[in-house]
Every structure is written in C-alpha cells, then in structure tokens.
Amino acid sequence: MSLMLQEIHQQPDVLARIAARERQSLRAVGERLRGKIRLIVLVARGSSDNACLFGRYLLELATGIPVSLAAPSVYTLYKGQLRLDETLVIGVSQSGEGVDINQVLREAKQRGAFTLGITNEPESSMVKLVDHPLLVHGGKELSLAATKTVTGQMMMFYLLAEALAGPTPATAGFERIPEYCQQALGHQDSVREIVQRYTFMENCVVIGRGLLYGNSYEFALKLMETCYVVAERFSSADFFHGPLALVERHFPAILFASPGPTMEGISSLAARLQELHADTLAITSDVPLAQACTRSILMPTEIGEFLTPIPYLIPAQMFAALLAEAKGLNPDQSRSLAKVTRTL
Figure 1 (spheres, rainbow, N blue to C red):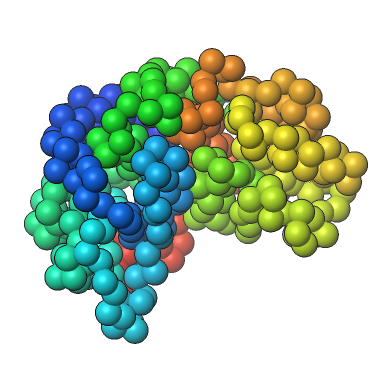
Figure 2: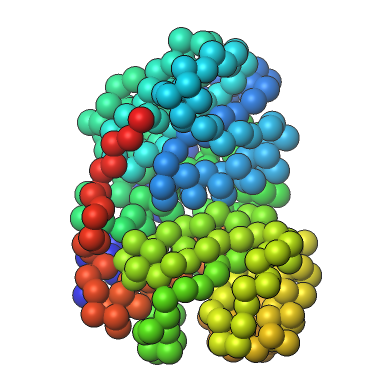
C-alpha cells in the first residue's frame, strides 16, 4: 500500500484528535474575538488554499462575517499597504514554512490584525510568529500528496466557525465527521474497480459548487500531481458559461453533489452531459443523480450538506492514489515537485 493510501486511512483518527485537542483552545480565542472582527482573511497556497475555499463558505455562512482569500503577491511583490484593523488573518500551511504565507502574517500583525496559523508542524516558523497557532496533529506526512493535513485544515474551520459564532446549523454535528470518513474508506474496493476505466485518461473536468467547490479544486490538484492528468475545475454554474463547449463523446467529467440548494444545478448539468454522451462520475448521496451518470460513488444520505466536504473528499483521494498505481506511477513521489514549496 502506498504511503498516500496509508495516510488517507489515518484521517478518521487525525480528525478526531483535532477536535479533542484544539476545541477548548479555540473557544477561548472565539470569546476574545467575538464582536470585534469585521473581516476574515485566509492566506494559503496549493492544497491549503483549496481547504480555504471550503473555509470561506463555512465561515461566512456560520458567522455572517465577510471572508476574503488573500493574494500573497499584493504583500510580497507589490508591497501593498492594507488596513487590517478589526481583521482576523488566518495562515494555512502544511509545513508552516511558506515564505510568502508567513510574510503576509507578519505584516498583518503590524497592521493591526489578529493572526492565527493552522499547520501540522509544531516547531515551524508559522507557530512562532502568529498570535495563536492551531495544530493539525496529523503526525509526519510522508507522501508528497497532502491528504490528512488538508482534511485536518478543513476540520479546523468547523472548530473556528463554532468558536466565533457559537452553535449554528453550519457546524451542528461536525463531531461525527470522523465516523463518516471511516465509512467512506469502505469504498476503496469499488474505487479501485472504477479507476481501471480511467487508466488512459489524460484530461478531465472536476465540478462542484458551494461547500463542495473546494473539493473540485483539491481533487483536480491531486489528479494533476499524482496522475499527470490535466484536470480543470469549475463551479457547476460557471461550467454552463462557456466550458461546456469542450465536452464531446466520452469526455470525463467528475461531479461532487451534496443534498441542498446546489443539487438542482448539478443535476441539470448532469442531464446535459448525458445528452452530450460525456463520461460522468458522481460522488453523491442522490440516487437519481447517480443513475443519470455513467458511474457513481454513493455516499450515505444521513450526511447533511454542511458535513459532506470532508467525507466526500475521501473517495476522491483514494481515486487519485489508485489511478496513479493503475497508470504505473508512484503517488508518493512526483516529478518536479517537493513537499515544502517556498515562493514569494
């Protein structure tokens, strides 16, 4: 079993550990900040940035506070002078050593922001410079492809949303996410069978919307870095505005679809893709949608919309790891890439 698959299987334990070890600490932070923050800024790169796409939706829905995804180059290359009083700036980095991420955090503190750092490395530079560090407690991640650290970062956003807003429908029941992830791991054999049909895939699109929009970015990134598949990612709404034109017979389209207000749009897109004879794979709990697609990974209906992002990502991670193996590639090592990327 590859290191990537081993670390995928570690995720239920990692997620449970995060909730147990960081929840109380975050409650204290929430009490300190509640009512004093008018803007939240998330700063990250790569897979961590994809986790932040999810965090943006969750935090805005839970707290009512606008959330921005920072453009680090504004700080590092253009030397922008931003006013950040009454702002919470959150850096997210697996290693805690992203030079540009840490520079943004450092300058944000100087401009009046309160800073948090979400990282897996307790001895990292990020931990030393932020006002309050938050640890993923994932243990050393050995595979180049980030899995447990990404879902750990996503889990931290549930804790943070609860800390800032108190109990809300957006975070209700998030304690069950490790259990749902354990169930999702049971799809491994069926995913292994499905990937055999995609061994020669070179291009695809990955589509999600709302809380699952970040999943589409993260799955596409995993396909690119482990399988060398050119994977474009879209919102289902944006896909109708032009990219639909590239779809032809047997073109692969992978859909994330959860119960809730985004389902109607995803279902309409799936119907159109069916008319175009595309090859569609759905990760969903919706049986009619699954039946409208070429293949599907059917998730439990008991997982409510707000709790779907992490469990729905598990089969996608397994798909990337197993497809890499089917292609004769090593998902733990990738050409031209390093585990820690330092950019400005």
